[in-house]
Length: 236
Image 1: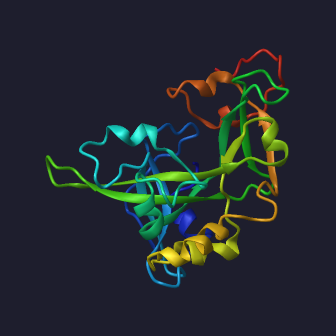
Image 2: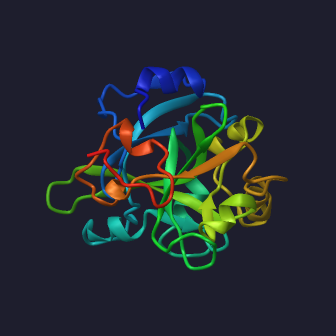
């Protein structure tokens, strides 16, 4: 993510923002800090830019070791799976990103494990549907906020790369998703329906990038530059 809290507050119409600075990072790995957009009122219109660790830690966890295993939550089971259902009902958010990386699987025509960068054609931030949790460290009593990205079955050109993709929410669904009103049993289908859009991959573009992204030690905008398949990789 290259944008700071001020820019995100403007783009996502947030009233408040965190004072914690998260450095720009073009290769975010699990358990790193990320920005999230959370709702502050029942309407979802009042919002704040906050920070969280990428990798949700359920409130009942004895330690934070599960974070790296819960970076994503499948939309098909998010309302039922013990690790995620409380956050789905009470703590929904948006996770902004310039774009994201995905690695080709054997289901498509590309070399397996070839990295691709996926972003919006108009360069706007991707508004990924997310959930967050508040976990209290039993050793020092400090509260740790962590988050996960919701994923769905991929469609369109993205399906040729990988069988999953983030759930991307259009602007007119932000308020409902960010509402602070708890989701009752009878309302679960309605909130899950928010995550279904007519064209989930609308406006997305994908192209191959250097395998330098495979190492979390590498960062910088050069990682998002297009590399033709079979071309020597000399970015680093």
